[in-house]
Length: 65
Image (spheres, one colour):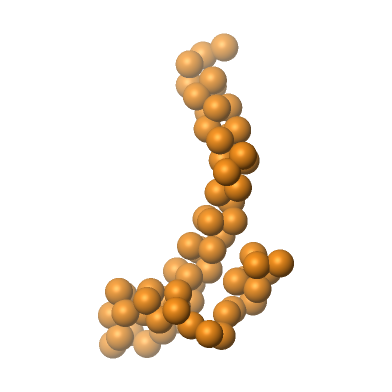
């Protein structure tokens, strides 16, 4: 088996053990929420507002459940 295939299998095992899929989904949800903020706010402030909001989006609620 090629080294690349072994490395890919090892990486997939690590991701499944650490449950990084939910972290990736959460980061995607925050990025989408930040994208929906007004453009004059700036990207950094939009991300901070998306992460710190008390009103989670539908995707955030799905990830939490």
